[in-house]
Length: 518
Ligand code: NFE
Ligand code: MG
Image (cartoon, rainbow, N blue to C red; front, side, top):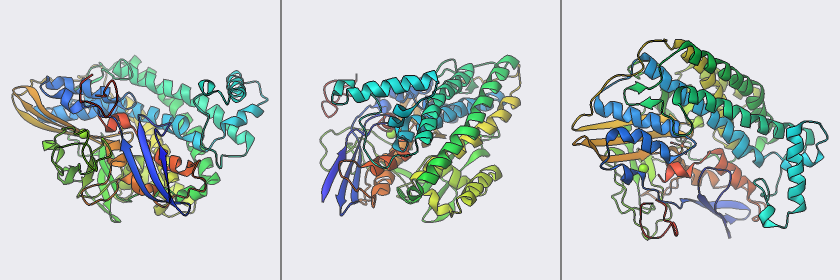
């Protein structure tokens, strides 16, 4: 029996520790730990409620659009207001731009180098200036490989079964560089309506801030067109190529097989119809989603607040030295079950509930191409495939939304902050189900709770000792070489974890030290 500690696991957002116990070449138990406490929920107490959508965006620079969305839906609910047509559609456009950016980021810049052999660039003989620069970097890197100070972002790495075909590797490195430009395009599209990225100014309670003009629509459409072309002709084919090269990863990283989606991208003013449907998949059965079944367990989390609270009445009281606790993430549960969230959950739930024929066709066609049953989606590769297909569904629909915008019409509904109120804002961030809850008292925030996608996925054991989704997904993973747990890293990265979001104060001296707001 041996223990492997990956701390921190690189190429994810934030600081996550993964610990696994290995017996006879396989993982037999796993622990995921978020080792920072940030305290955003405390920072919000006593503030003007309108500040929530600005402050909560600072939880994360990767998915601020989603926190803006959840916070404004939450405040809309507490204030009893709804955005006008343009306001609703603009929120979709802003969130959609962030989805596309985030999914491309994840596949190319965070996950692909689990498969692509970056050192293949040393054999590049072509004339592309960008690839020549990468080659020069790699040569320099290898010349200094015993000098830690000279080690770049890609090496060292866990060694293992990387793609061997040199041309395929070089094509993938070229796409890695193209993907940087594509992310810039998606960010530009976001800033047309959001002013800046990260932490946009485009979404506020009651709607959006930017007036709709024909030039803003036109400048968005051509950027989106380029993104659609990239998704169709580069991103999806690359995911298919990885899937063909690594079919065994259709059966690694299976996880809890329970899925949760709050639904996202409102398609009507009541919010009853969404592009990606709300729903759950538990013990093999699809069902409607009801927010009353959410609670957060803290038996293994460093909090002294009560366990099992619904987030509307949630509490976040840190306890640095709590016995048995190993993480700053809480363990969210639905009907007391661990639930995986993210693109796989959204696409699967939308498909099995039959809520969007385009999603069902894409999922069906992909499964047919691989001659596979839907069960293969519960896997490392299933998560990558669902993310790529979702990028397409969102980008294609965004073309319609941009055309549905009405120049000159209102983008915003006026409101007053009520003396008291309670709100719930449920949306889906690129990484999964995101909920914000607020209680307003004397026109100030009395309580604010965020339950974030990576808290669902990377959370710890619950009151019943049942592991969180990432922990469960690691059990049974082959570890042929304990010094190079590449499959473990591949599985964890397939969830696209973001710990900045999940542990929503870092102590200046050490994370585990005295509680202090910095
Ligand atoms: Ni910080 Fe986030 C997304 C949210 S994840 S990236 O997507 O909300 O926990
Ligand atoms: Mg929380």
